[in-house]
Length: 497
Image (cartoon, rainbow, N blue to C red; front, top):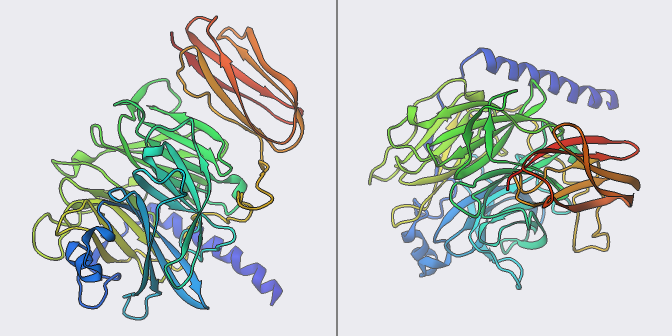
């Protein structure tokens, strides 16, 4: 039996690889939506103002501006439950909807609703994108977490969740990205097809302080900045093919063939959808761009989601549709939805969230709010697979700031990108070391001449940031090199005066 248990994962991996290879050669069928109303309660068909009035006699007490959601699969008193957490930018809070897991009908039974505003001293301000490392698997309250892009407070908030019969308890754990973020709007988790926490990263899209200053940033799971990118370059070339002016959403899907992660970013300026590719040791590299105007005359991209086969779903609020593409954006499907007033139509879909844990592909469509809109739920035929890609990662080892062991040690060497980059006069260089080391950071000009040493000392294991003052240097490209006994890494930065 023990040998059999060792063989099963290997067989699953082989099947998964064959499964993935098949996607590259065979066009998957058109995804078909059927309105299932899996969050329906009693005879109320839609989660709009009418529903809110029926539930509590107060339309504002549930949601005003729903933005994003995550599904957490938990147990309460030994019974399987689903906790659906929804961000509400209108009420500056998260609401948790606790349901019994769906039975044969696919419809859940609502148990409780609870609200969370964050810690008392700094409450949420425009809580936007949500993410969790427990994707399509059981949520472990001891080790797993939820992240929310707290847009108005320029930070990512990491939360613990403890399920209970009253809706569950969200608890502040720590913040990520303070000092680097200006209006973060969405966040995604990448494990590069690996369950190891040490190879995981968090991708954040940030609107920037001023119009046209959007960025894609990457942090490791300990909160260290690994890089930020505004320009989108042609592969292997300095040619800029696009810029992030107003990024809207980000999501990650593992490329199980190449052992990489595909990173999808929607952009509201000129309406492209960028596809990038990366591993944990590499900077994201442009792979493809799709002009959403090809699918509709009035595009405005929103949230991004994937089914088990890697098909891509993009919410389009201006036209009231969900645009759909094959894996790797290989082909275009007919869009789902039709803007109108008849029941069952989607109206202003700002986001789509897909979950396949319960052996069914469930899609939650979040809409910009008005009387006929709110939350709509669907079943997508053909979106569920018994063999799933390795999304998410194990939360074991995530730092718990409420415990005695709040200090956490990095699991690997990391040299972050200079921030900001390009910079004027000063920038911050961050790095992490997993053990005590002699650390040296030198700065070189484009001719390879050393112009400064900004650090040369013994450091204990941990995360650090140093400031580089370039006020005495001329504009141009410079290189900074981190050297320890076991690690050498060089990156570039641009000084503009």
